[in-house]
Length: 274
Length: 274
DNA sequence: CCTGATATCTTTACGGCGTAAAGAGTTCGA
DNA sequence: TCGAACTCTTTACGCCGTAAAGATATCAGG
Image (cartoon, rainbow over all chains, first blue to last red; front, side, top):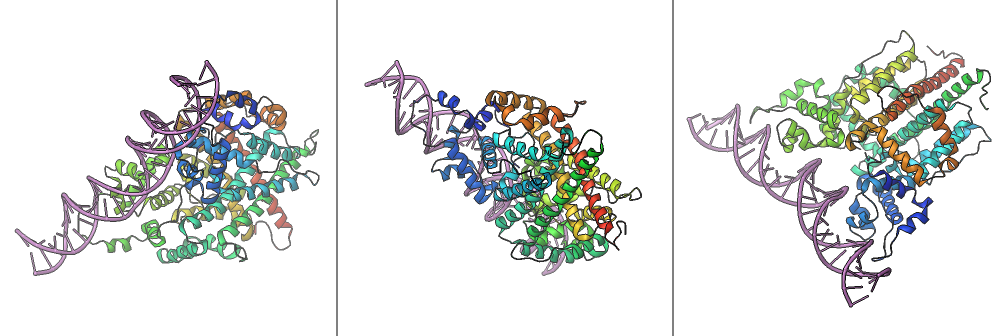
């Protein structure tokens, strides 16, 4: 797990928001010394490229430097340390998310779109899931993403105190579901063993080592035999299951939100779409 | 992030399930050489002690060995490597969870109890949250925990295909919510900066660096001003928020499950509590 | 009892990590 | 032109997981 928000707060913040206030940082530059051949942007891009290609575990100051034809230490001229680099990568990546959603078909459709886009985003940049969520990075794009989801959710008419928690539920769920897929891919890539083989080796060994499995865990066996998703195209087993969990699980959560809306709607003077 | 299920499947499995089949492993021992002063159990206990006290980041073969008065390499006689040690620690810790729940007050009450117990378990052993969930470890206690939750959920009367996903939703949510608290504590311990101070430093710097914040993110400001939980006892801000998110979020999810149950109940021949 | 096989455990070493410290090289203002 | 200011490299330190080799202890068989 990578921790954010550990460096100097001022320095991190000015780096994160620097694009919004370029005139301020530009004034600071005294043009003495060799012109910088790198830039914070270039370093952040290189970092994202490394993480996208080989995962967070492969992200080191040395690998990022190498990709830019520099040593690891060269990066420290631009960025205080690895933690801050990850913060910057995180906020930069979040810029890919849509800025708002069409609410004409109702909040539920918009929320479903948000979830699908966020899900795909996480699978495109799985390393993002390894950036800690406590002490959030507080970059502009993180705020924009949150603002965008809030616009959708305020359309439910729920009050702020409840919305706060609903945001949490949605984020935790999408992140968790995406994490399952991301980690399964990562494990496959890291070990070279595809999901199917791994699964088979495990369950084969399991029946040897625990022959009384069916008696000890009857409901598990029942779930396994009854609830399996039909085998599909090329998608590996674990990934297919996670995909279905995402779809059905999201529906369950949205049902729950609808129930809250309906309950709030019965309170006089507070209509659900007001 | 720590990955599980990377070592030799057979070796990991026999270590995990060894308690269930002690006669088999006992037979294997040839009493030549010095008597082992350590044991797998002692090593796993030491590992858990280290991780509980100082977090997963502090867990190294050297620190675990030191706690047992041995060198790091001594552990390799008992355990194939660090990954397998983490697998064993994980399954051992899970043994703390209750084995089943009283269903006489209905599945919803039982599910709420399960969630509360699991939540507390994660906060007692926060490092557990850093063990990857893809390619599950397949230890006996993990299966027992799952079996226990399944017993509660089968009481809803939902069919297996849906239950599979509901299990996923509940786990993702509880893990995600607990992770927020765990990471916030960990960050506080690692940096020595309590939540409150960190929050203040960040938001102070933020208003300097982004003076147009209120115009750019009006809904965020609205959420912040309207939805804040009342200040309470000694619990830090982030933790209090996470606690509320857990409570309210769980209710939303259970509402969603109830909606599924009600829908299934309207289908003739499939009663919700059948 | 002695010897040799087998086991535990230590020592040393290797290549990785983040980054501190020092210095080499480049570009400008005075 | 000189030195300050800046970029970037080199070297080094203490961590990590673990491979390899050796020291030490225990027992079976001669």
